[in-house]
Image 1 (cartoon, rainbow over the protein chains, first blue to last red):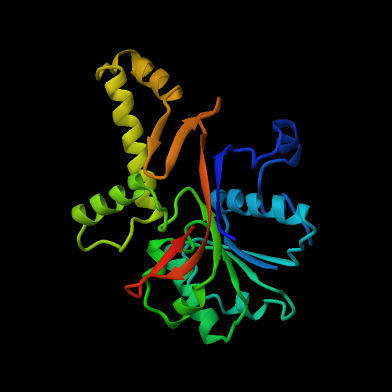
Image 2 (cartoon, one colour):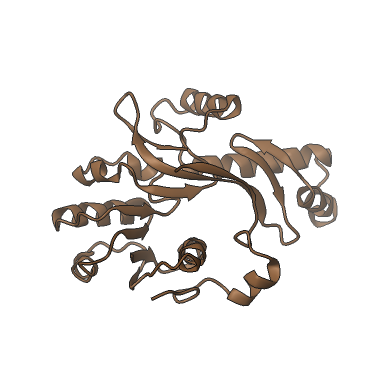
Length: 33
Length: 216
Protein backbone atom coordinates (compact mmCIF):
# COMPACT_ATOMS: atom_id res chain seq x y z
CA UNK A 1 0.00 0.00 0.00
CA UNK A 2 2.75 2.43 0.80
CA UNK A 3 4.83 3.91 -1.98
CA UNK A 4 6.84 6.89 -3.18
CA UNK A 5 5.62 9.35 -5.79
CA UNK A 6 8.57 11.16 -7.32
CA UNK A 7 8.72 14.82 -8.31
CA UNK A 8 5.30 15.85 -7.03
CA UNK A 9 4.42 19.32 -8.24
CA UNK A 10 2.10 21.84 -6.61
CA UNK A 11 -0.70 21.02 -9.07
CA UNK A 12 -1.51 17.61 -7.54
CA UNK A 13 -0.29 15.82 -10.66
CA UNK A 14 -2.92 17.59 -12.76
CA UNK A 15 -2.26 19.68 -15.87
CA UNK A 16 -1.93 23.30 -14.80
CA UNK A 17 -5.11 24.36 -16.62
CA UNK A 18 -7.12 21.64 -14.89
CA UNK A 19 -5.64 22.52 -11.50
CA UNK A 20 -6.37 26.22 -12.00
CA UNK A 21 -9.93 25.40 -13.02
CA UNK A 22 -10.44 23.62 -9.69
CA UNK A 23 -9.85 26.88 -7.84
CA UNK A 24 -7.99 27.57 -4.62
CA UNK A 25 -8.36 24.92 -1.96
CA UNK A 26 -10.81 26.06 0.69
CA UNK A 27 -13.52 24.78 3.01
CA UNK A 28 -15.62 23.72 0.03
CA UNK A 29 -13.15 23.37 -2.86
CA UNK A 30 -13.07 20.66 -4.01
CA UNK A 31 -16.12 18.91 -2.64
CA UNK A 32 -17.90 15.54 -2.94
CA UNK A 33 -20.75 15.39 -0.42
CA UNK B 1 -15.77 9.87 5.20
CA UNK B 2 -15.99 12.42 7.95
CA UNK B 3 -13.34 15.12 7.88
CA UNK B 4 -11.99 17.28 10.67
CA UNK B 5 -9.31 19.91 10.00
CA UNK B 6 -8.00 23.17 11.36
CA UNK B 7 -9.56 26.18 9.70
CA UNK B 8 -6.68 27.84 7.84
CA UNK B 9 -4.63 27.64 4.66
CA UNK B 10 -2.24 24.77 5.41
CA UNK B 11 -5.02 22.25 6.12
CA UNK B 12 -7.04 23.65 3.20
CA UNK B 13 -4.20 22.64 0.87
CA UNK B 14 -3.84 19.20 2.44
CA UNK B 15 -7.59 18.59 2.26
CA UNK B 16 -7.57 19.82 -1.34
CA UNK B 17 -4.95 17.21 -2.21
CA UNK B 18 -6.93 14.45 -0.56
CA UNK B 19 -10.31 15.53 -1.90
CA UNK B 20 -9.15 15.97 -5.50
CA UNK B 21 -8.11 12.32 -5.71
CA UNK B 22 -10.76 10.88 -3.42
CA UNK B 23 -13.66 12.63 -5.13
CA UNK B 24 -12.32 11.69 -8.57
CA UNK B 25 -12.44 8.03 -7.48
CA UNK B 26 -16.08 8.37 -6.49
CA UNK B 27 -15.54 8.87 -2.77
CA UNK B 28 -17.84 10.94 -0.60
CA UNK B 29 -17.00 13.20 2.32
CA UNK B 30 -20.43 13.57 3.91
CA UNK B 31 -19.47 16.05 6.61
CA UNK B 32 -16.58 18.37 7.40
CA UNK B 33 -15.71 20.07 10.67
CA UNK B 34 -13.38 23.07 10.37
CA UNK B 35 -12.10 23.94 13.84
CA UNK B 36 -10.04 26.92 15.07
CA UNK B 37 -6.37 26.40 15.86
CA UNK B 38 -5.97 25.65 19.57
CA UNK B 39 -9.38 24.05 20.02
CA UNK B 40 -9.53 22.30 23.41
CA UNK B 41 -13.02 20.81 23.45
CA UNK B 42 -14.00 18.51 20.58
CA UNK B 43 -17.09 17.05 22.20
CA UNK B 44 -19.59 18.71 19.85
CA UNK B 45 -17.53 17.71 16.80
CA UNK B 46 -17.26 14.10 17.97
CA UNK B 47 -20.96 13.97 18.75
CA UNK B 48 -21.65 15.08 15.18
CA UNK B 49 -19.70 12.28 13.49
CA UNK B 50 -22.22 10.38 11.35
CA UNK B 51 -22.38 6.78 12.61
CA UNK B 52 -22.26 5.25 9.14
CA UNK B 53 -19.00 6.77 7.86
CA UNK B 54 -16.22 4.35 6.99
CA UNK B 55 -13.32 6.41 8.28
CA UNK B 56 -12.21 9.80 9.58
CA UNK B 57 -9.85 12.16 7.76
CA UNK B 58 -7.99 14.00 10.52
CA UNK B 59 -5.91 17.02 9.51
CA UNK B 60 -4.87 18.39 12.88
CA UNK B 61 -1.40 19.00 14.30
CA UNK B 62 0.35 19.11 17.64
CA UNK B 63 -1.83 19.58 20.73
CA UNK B 64 -4.96 19.81 18.56
CA UNK B 65 -4.35 16.29 17.24
CA UNK B 66 -3.56 14.94 20.71
CA UNK B 67 -6.65 16.54 22.29
CA UNK B 68 -8.90 15.25 19.52
CA UNK B 69 -7.44 11.73 19.64
CA UNK B 70 -7.80 11.52 23.42
CA UNK B 71 -11.37 12.80 23.40
CA UNK B 72 -12.30 10.54 20.47
CA UNK B 73 -10.92 7.58 22.40
CA UNK B 74 -12.88 8.57 25.50
CA UNK B 75 -16.04 8.89 23.42
CA UNK B 76 -15.59 5.42 21.94
CA UNK B 77 -14.85 6.45 18.36
CA UNK B 78 -13.66 3.29 16.65
CA UNK B 79 -13.34 4.39 13.02
CA UNK B 80 -10.02 4.08 11.19
CA UNK B 81 -8.11 7.29 10.46
CA UNK B 82 -6.47 8.88 7.47
CA UNK B 83 -4.04 11.49 8.75
CA UNK B 84 -2.65 14.79 7.51
CA UNK B 85 1.10 15.14 7.20
CA UNK B 86 1.50 16.53 10.74
CA UNK B 87 -1.25 14.40 12.28
CA UNK B 88 0.96 11.33 12.43
CA UNK B 89 4.47 12.77 12.49
CA UNK B 90 6.74 12.32 15.48
CA UNK B 91 5.32 15.34 17.32
CA UNK B 92 2.04 13.41 17.68
CA UNK B 93 3.18 9.78 17.54
CA UNK B 94 5.10 10.28 20.78
CA UNK B 95 2.19 11.38 22.92
CA UNK B 96 1.23 8.96 25.67
CA UNK B 97 -2.54 8.67 25.37
CA UNK B 98 -4.24 5.32 24.95
CA UNK B 99 -5.63 6.39 21.56
CA UNK B 100 -2.09 6.25 20.21
CA UNK B 101 -2.48 2.49 19.75
CA UNK B 102 -5.38 3.04 17.39
CA UNK B 103 -3.15 5.14 15.15
CA UNK B 104 -1.45 1.95 14.00
CA UNK B 105 -2.22 1.50 10.32
CA UNK B 106 -3.26 5.13 9.82
CA UNK B 107 -2.54 6.15 6.24
CA UNK B 108 -0.94 9.48 5.51
CA UNK B 109 1.33 11.23 3.04
CA UNK B 110 4.05 13.84 3.15
CA UNK B 111 7.50 14.86 1.97
CA UNK B 112 9.29 12.43 4.32
CA UNK B 113 8.71 9.16 6.17
CA UNK B 114 10.39 7.79 9.27
CA UNK B 115 11.03 4.47 7.56
CA UNK B 116 12.91 5.68 4.48
CA UNK B 117 15.55 3.08 3.79
CA UNK B 118 18.30 5.07 2.11
CA UNK B 119 21.83 5.92 3.31
CA UNK B 120 21.05 9.66 3.09
CA UNK B 121 17.98 9.37 5.34
CA UNK B 122 19.70 7.04 7.81
CA UNK B 123 22.59 9.50 8.11
CA UNK B 124 20.13 12.36 8.67
CA UNK B 125 18.40 10.42 11.45
CA UNK B 126 21.73 9.48 13.04
CA UNK B 127 22.95 13.10 12.90
CA UNK B 128 19.64 14.31 14.39
CA UNK B 129 19.88 11.83 17.27
CA UNK B 130 23.49 12.83 17.93
CA UNK B 131 22.57 16.52 17.97
CA UNK B 132 19.37 16.05 19.99
CA UNK B 133 19.77 13.01 22.27
CA UNK B 134 16.60 14.00 24.16
CA UNK B 135 14.65 14.54 20.93
CA UNK B 136 12.17 12.30 19.16
CA UNK B 137 13.14 8.78 18.02
CA UNK B 138 13.13 10.14 14.46
CA UNK B 139 13.07 13.75 13.16
CA UNK B 140 9.64 15.35 12.97
CA UNK B 141 8.27 16.80 9.75
CA UNK B 142 9.13 20.25 11.12
CA UNK B 143 12.75 19.26 11.82
CA UNK B 144 13.07 17.89 8.29
CA UNK B 145 11.55 20.97 6.64
CA UNK B 146 13.67 23.41 8.68
CA UNK B 147 16.73 21.33 7.77
CA UNK B 148 16.17 21.37 4.00
CA UNK B 149 15.24 25.06 4.06
CA UNK B 150 18.49 25.84 5.86
CA UNK B 151 20.37 23.51 3.53
CA UNK B 152 18.99 25.42 0.53
CA UNK B 153 19.97 28.80 1.94
CA UNK B 154 23.49 27.61 2.75
CA UNK B 155 23.90 26.18 -0.76
CA UNK B 156 22.61 29.46 -2.19
CA UNK B 157 25.02 31.48 -0.10
CA UNK B 158 27.89 29.27 -1.28
CA UNK B 159 26.82 29.78 -4.88
CA UNK B 160 27.01 33.58 -4.58
CA UNK B 161 30.00 33.49 -2.25
CA UNK B 162 28.03 35.29 0.45
CA UNK B 163 27.17 38.25 -1.77
CA UNK B 164 23.97 39.79 -0.33
CA UNK B 165 24.26 43.09 -2.17
CA UNK B 166 21.47 44.70 -4.20
CA UNK B 167 18.72 43.51 -1.89
CA UNK B 168 20.03 39.91 -2.04
CA UNK B 169 19.31 39.77 -5.79
CA UNK B 170 22.07 37.25 -6.56
CA UNK B 171 21.01 34.99 -3.68
CA UNK B 172 17.37 35.11 -4.80
CA UNK B 173 18.38 34.19 -8.36
CA UNK B 174 20.56 31.35 -7.09
CA UNK B 175 17.79 29.95 -4.91
CA UNK B 176 15.28 30.09 -7.78
CA UNK B 177 17.35 27.70 -9.90
CA UNK B 178 18.80 25.64 -7.05
CA UNK B 179 18.38 21.86 -7.14
CA UNK B 180 19.82 19.55 -4.51
CA UNK B 181 19.49 16.16 -2.90
CA UNK B 182 18.03 16.42 0.60
CA UNK B 183 17.77 13.56 3.11
CA UNK B 184 14.44 12.44 1.61
CA UNK B 185 15.07 13.05 -2.07
CA UNK B 186 15.73 15.54 -4.85
CA UNK B 187 14.27 19.04 -4.47
CA UNK B 188 13.79 21.87 -6.93
CA UNK B 189 11.44 24.84 -7.33
CA UNK B 190 8.82 25.62 -9.94
CA UNK B 191 8.29 29.03 -11.55
CA UNK B 192 6.31 30.18 -8.48
CA UNK B 193 9.08 29.10 -6.07
CA UNK B 194 7.00 26.16 -4.86
CA UNK B 195 8.87 22.95 -4.15
CA UNK B 196 8.81 19.93 -6.42
CA UNK B 197 9.90 16.83 -4.54
CA UNK B 198 9.11 13.26 -3.62
CA UNK B 199 5.96 12.44 -1.65
CA UNK B 200 5.79 9.36 0.58
CA UNK B 201 2.57 7.44 1.10
CA UNK B 202 2.84 6.00 4.60
CA UNK B 203 1.11 4.09 7.32
CA UNK B 204 1.81 4.11 11.04
CA UNK B 205 3.59 1.01 12.35
CA UNK B 206 5.23 -0.05 15.57
CA UNK B 207 9.02 -0.04 15.65
CA UNK B 208 11.04 -2.90 17.20
CA UNK B 209 11.71 -0.71 20.26
CA UNK B 210 7.97 -0.13 20.78
CA UNK B 211 7.95 3.38 19.36
CA UNK B 212 5.65 4.47 16.56
CA UNK B 213 6.92 5.26 13.08
CA UNK B 214 5.60 6.29 9.69
CA UNK B 215 6.74 3.53 7.39
CA UNK B 216 6.92 3.74 3.64
